[in-house]
Image (spheres, helix red, strand yellow):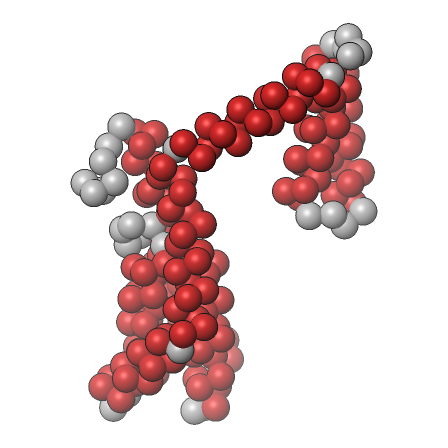
Amino acid sequence: MIELSPEIVAFLMLGGVFSLVLTGFPIAFVIGSVAFLVGILIFGTTTTFHILYSRFYALTLNYPYLAVPLFSFMGVVLQHSGITKDLYESLYESLGRIKGGLAVVTIVFGTILAACLGVIAASVTILTLIALEPMVTRGYDRSLATGSIVAAGTLGILIPPSIMLVVYAPQAGLSIGQM
């Protein structure tokens, strides 16, 4: 345990984060490892491991946060089961006759997917895997195809229950069902 002023600790942590980020490590691991090492340096191993254990345990007791990995798991299940491709094809058969129908199908499909997933990155990834190739092969410009995919994927944060609303509701003292 070393006695350091808060300014020195802040500069030490900032320097550690910048140097490790510049080496190419992922930011989440950089921040966690720098905080862990500085915690051991300042508080000692026993106190640092106790703080780490109590924070992880407190997060497992916070039930709304358990929905975050489950939303991602739902996206993986939808992607690997093949339901998303079948839904996209059936929407194309029903809406594909109108002018710009494939872009409309992509946006409607993205809306349905966003309501199921609640995560923007997962929605955009699945939409790109499923919708980009059919749009380009049917003559859509690549920029129009990617624009409609990104526009449809960003609806995930607006349609409840999105992850942002699931995390925000307990902080605001509201029921997730009322959101």
